[in-house]
Length: 327
Image (cartoon, rainbow, N blue to C red; front, side, top):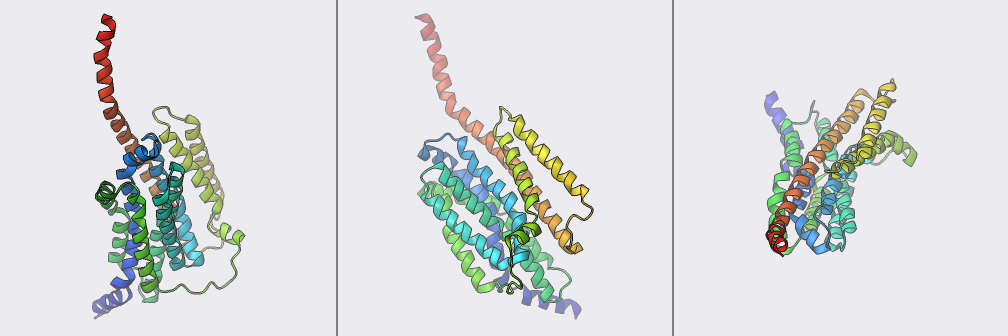
């Protein structure tokens, strides 16, 4: 009987209507992270920039996500996960419009920042929504199937970006790599409005200083500087910018020392809240490592493409050398 009651509670509390918008929102980030790779060469040709410069569109999203995701988790606790989820999806919608209408690389970078910020809110807010739903249903912990679905939506769907981007870019051009976010965001917003329960009203007035303190704004800023410096170092290859690497290491060491020097890292928070905070920063670190790996991979791809493009020119130059020497 207990097992059947548990299954009934899970089915009632975590219906497909509740779970679907959470899965859809969580899938937007990994899809966007891989989809853009299919549009880099057309973007470079259309905007008359080098292919290497378009790599910033990849690193921008990873850097923004690494910074915004732990921040979104804390903001979800402060303002409510549904509000943060919807705000993020609206940012994705705006990013799709900006990128689709962009006429230079700077506009596309702004679009990727908006998309990164927006998609980064989905996973932490979804996790908080699931946890609160489980508590309301009287469950000790969220069902493993729902958590596993969120993890898969937030990671494995990265593979869907390549074929989707290939079809869209080949059929309708590179702008579709951005414009595709408009219908996806509209669907996610409609589903969230219809099927995600409203957040409770905010009990007390919220000040900017109080929120900045509770979300650990100083720590987020330090993490952002370290990640940005590390990406600058990686993008500087094969002529490494050692100053950028030194800055990244210095900020990381200083931040770690500051944390260890504090006897109570998060005063006034419960053990559970402290654990959530640590988990959020752990997730950010994981995304940072993913960013490093993907940027490095992209740099290898760009180098191979450049070598392939230059190969005919070098062959022609080698053929012309004997003729010039004979003259």
